[in-house]
Image 1 (cartoon, rainbow, N blue to C red):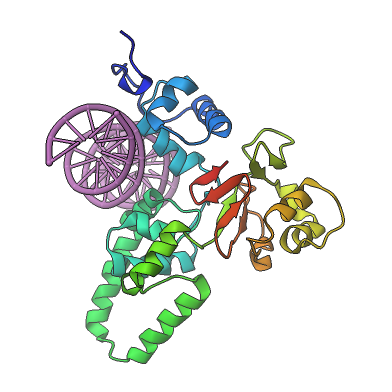
Image 2: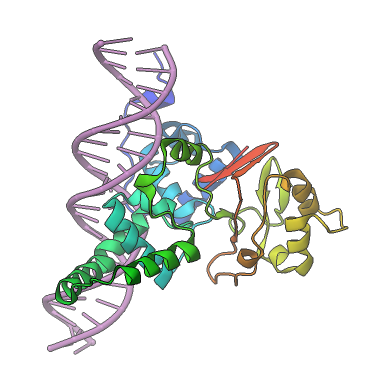
Length: 269
DNA sequence: AAACAGTTCAACCGCGTCTGG
DNA sequence: GCCAGACGCGGTTGAACTGTT
């Protein structure tokens, strides 16, 4: 007889919180094999979970580049504004907040922003704002500072198709701190830099502008993709988060380079 | 210190959509 | 066109945590 992995009769799948060991298994598996068919992941990775659970764990917790910690006030405003425009389209909203997951945003909305939004709705009714200039000014400010696209529904179909093809042009995040020790630079068509490397001053020069003289792995990477990517120095200058060593960077036109492809959901070779 | 209430957030569930045979 | 399996999304749940009495 024999079943394909995905057709296997359902064993009792484990539920509930993930243990560090399970996380490690999943990470290891995805590092080695990339994201493919989720239903076969638990079997191949030796996990007693279903594929759906693995996918969720990866997307919401293990995926490279996730931000941890409090939402900034800018992020809050962004969520509120986008929610007014898009409604409960958490995945769409999440696309405008790099490093945040739809689940995280949804939770934050229900636990905090919803109340705040309701409050401000009440205030609006009371104050009855009539000065559209003020509103425009706020919207412009939000747009400028966050690159957010408030006219999501108004963009042409061609523009939306273009964006889908290139995914988001918003910052992408490179993973580092959960890869094996001493892992850096290009390796197996994947890409990773450590926090220590980020802190080296010439790293930014080498990486961003390809002016460095050393023949490091960073240089190699720089040479690989510098034609497609323009680094935002301001982002590289951001202080490191306390809980992870991810680095933020922004690609002007997505990252499509020989050998690998990066998106908000991961890095693919 | 204990009990209870409120909050947070990881994870599950169910449904709609997509895709390949 | 139909069907089954996989995927993605939004709603919901419940355990863990925190604050209050």
